[in-house]
Length: 142
Image (tube, rainbow, N blue to C red; front, top):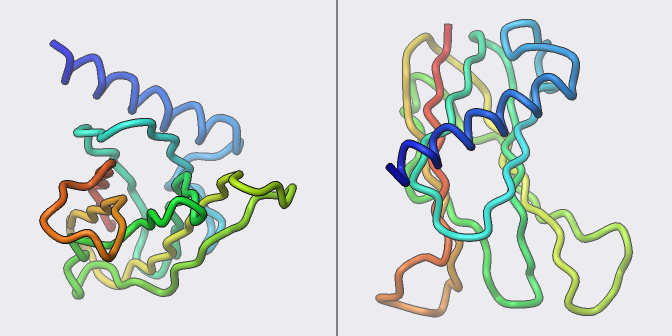
């Protein structure tokens, strides 16, 4: 039941982001599809993203570099479907000590198909420690 509720909440989040942008992923032109996800704990729901071949899309997740945590791409997309273009930490607008920013991972859809992207929020020096957060995306390239 919790998983179903979480999945519904994630879908609602995705729809609200798309509606706020005033377009659907299929109507997006390259490089203007950005999915922002706010997670407070590990999220087992898989967020769907649909793009066309040639589109670039970005996933932005809350992050706080001052804590030592960083998002890591643990499940890369199939290279025939999508490729990682770049990743960057975005500091907060107000430079206040301890305030978090976000990380953006930008991908390019290179071929039709479906693939999964998984990002884990960890401290790189901590070995054998479970991620604090995990976020998965199912990418469908048309």
